[in-house]
Length: 378
Image (cartoon, rainbow, N blue to C red; front, top):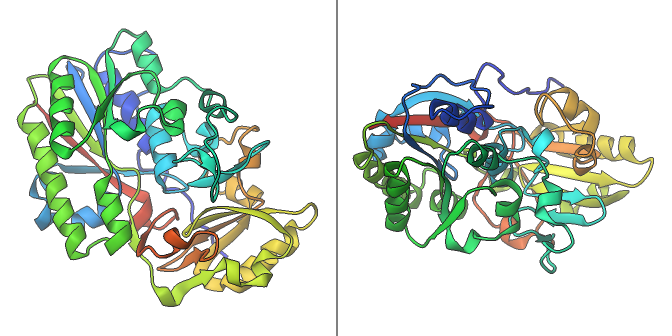
């Protein structure tokens, strides 16, 4: 079996914020993306779910975005929101920032949901016992920028103001909670005009893609709203201002015929202690001494629907980046499965809502891995 490996010829999502901050005059960052050095105010705006292939396919629905189309970025594995936001916020790959999945097993805690910061599939808030600053202790890019004297703001949904994920990977700036797309555009414009750095986040394109499928009529109409959002920000860029639009992952439409219900197959559950990840990227945590048997069972059952590897094989293939910190290794499954084509590894008993979705992401296909880097200058 030939394993996919990250495209190291492409810049990584984690490279964007350091490059922008360097262009603003901040010191101590390594810039791997060439930008002008006369930037006086900037925003990195992340559009959840805006894959590069999707944008190229539906460019007619997003003329402003398409007109800014430039470089392509790789997001790394898993191609999911928690990992993508952590890459932006820390400047590192998942093997270092530790957000290795939508859900993953945290030693001493169990399987947790990185977005809700609660046990998976349900349970009480974990912020007091799995303190976000301890789960992800590295200084964020925002903390480092603030130390360099740059005013940093995080402009995102008001409901995420003090969330576990915000505290873990986006801390260090002034949090500006917003409630609607116009609110987001106005706050981003203000931050750039004031000469600071801001990170902005918009979630709705991803939500519509999950519910109706990427490329559906609803998704294309939502893409038009995103295009207008970006146009509104670009119109307000001052001289020396920069807007960098990125995404955390792309998305694929999964086929019901290619779905494997893990909860309904005893062979996939034998000797398994816990399962994390999501439908396109699974972490399988096994009983002591059972790794090889579980690996064989998952490979046989999933066949050509997924790449199924051991933890060591996934790390050696570079799935989690060029370096995996020793303390992060236990968060990665003993067995890791990444979906191929339009397949999915659903859990209809444990994850009924997620299993009902049409659009998914998380795996290593280019549709999920590649996102655009769109640059606009004042």
